Length: 479
Image (cartoon, rainbow, N blue to C red; front, side, top):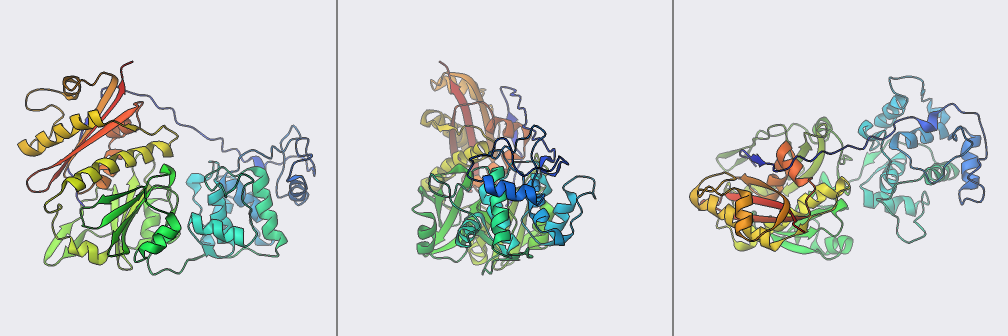
């Protein structure tokens, strides 16, 4: 679980303009009280919006509209909830930010909220998690959706399904609040779902059967070899909810997830490092395997915890305020049985797994940020693989090979015509997961992964001692 040095090779400087959401507390603005709005007549939620306005749960805009199809932030939804239950005595006039008192109250109730999401449009799935939490149920997205549907707190969309990743609208948010009130419910402190393990993804925990996994997730898109010896069941059909489940003897022995359907004691992506510590305890500085201490050189980019019979590694995004970016959990007995630092006798199947996972992980990072996924390119993958093999065979680590050829000359020599290209390399990471997470925490490599390129090819090779070498080649074909 250690990592070695990386070298960035950036051929193009690409400027990225971040999206800044308007954090203005529209729903808490002190507008004139109204019960109907110019744009809600005939709307499916007309009566519900009027209900919310009468009770000062929501207000409209100065122009007399409500904008029922507009988005709702997490902070605005919390404001709705607490206004619907005035007996909670949440004073919105206190605090440095208009939403601070709402977050303090929600945090005291152990609800899955984070001020980092205060100004960002919330998804229907996340609002389902908060709604379930108000009734004492701290659940992952999938289980929360099942819960709110079963309890009648929300409905699916007319097009079918729930649309967990869709942005919740102002009308939908008011309807959920009304459903809670109309059912005669009150707000409760959330308790974590009882589970034999602290970590789950899409409702699947370590120790669950293959049958349960297939029933919940369907057939995997791919089955990959792993350095541990188990088989990764890869679910990359939706990069927003990417996950892999390590299967050994018919049971789940490992989980990796970087999408929205995982939870650790109620934590999800965008929680901070301190939150992981609060949920999982003190991070480890080493793992004792027999008489050997396997040191964990985390460098502030990740922590490993021992919890409920598993080793849980939490990865942080140092370029996004240290928020949690992904989690990997491995059954303790499986981790203990992996005594070597690198995979012994690495196979071509393991090489292919690392290559394909490197593509998947790069694409999850892109799709999360609204970017198009890369298209796999077998020709440039061959170029990348030759460079990794050369580094592994000749024990060097550089973008320039021993013949003096840089990435662009190597691409041209293989007949790759490009208008833009770049390269990432790594050595020593025990898996594609560790290589990817380290690349994302290195500015130059991160720029390449999130860059304006169309295709990606990845090549992996192993040295005689099993040490992996990774090369990512990005490019846009020359038209």
